[in-house]
Length: 368
Image (cartoon, rainbow, N blue to C red; front, side, top):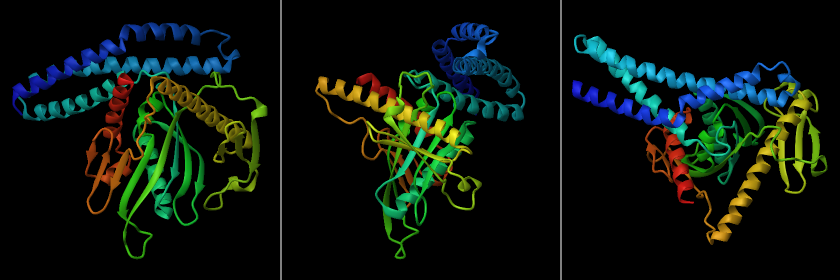
């Protein structure tokens, strides 16, 4: 590669980082860390466990952000040294190109982080997947999406816990609920919400005909227990039952699964994958609080749109298509981002779609 091309790419990377650093504001991060460290060192910190959890979580996140910014600055400084070495050593040039490629990719991720400034973007997320039209193919598709998000979370170092799974009779799942416990999980995944469509030659059809099936994905933030959403005990009905699932799991031997019905809204939440009834109830209440918050925000947004005279839905009926036959393609119908490797996407390679979705969501907020 010509030295002028390398120099131009390095300069573009340096300029991009300067813009990102201005938004992330390292001086502000250091100030936040200092304040949070003072709170964390208070002898009575754990007298209030909820507040202690908030402080330690915020401190860990701010420290990680500051480390990322400083590490990127160091890597950019090292690029100049590598470029000088590459002028005399072909092997150093190859190393320079590899590092520059990785830096450009990492800068994209940092750039996206600057767009995640919504009220709940920094929170963990609850992902709910439901099979739609398409019979057994839709149930199988829902399970494929569940695996896809779990693989994506694993690849990105995020903790994902399956809280509840309802299995279909023949194959696949009717629904599943997953908690992704990582900073900015909600903001990162929010644009994944909507209707997903699969087109393929059905493995469940003896004639091998092409089948179209659908699945719905819902993303809500995980609200802290100190959230403004309060749920009176009189508003809920709690049922306990024996967990179910394939195989002879030990959780199937006791009535540890919990189903909570929010009577005023009819929202039903269940959790069966924890070991005890108490744990399942706590997890189900977190999901319920998050869904009630989402419902509250949707009602507020609908009221604003009604006042403004617009009733357009926020999400289209089909936000992404996964086509396996007669050709190979996955395409987001809002951003027009597409790839020709569906298997890689189902294996968790979602970053391109997620980055495009975050930019799309930000653009929608600006014009609304």
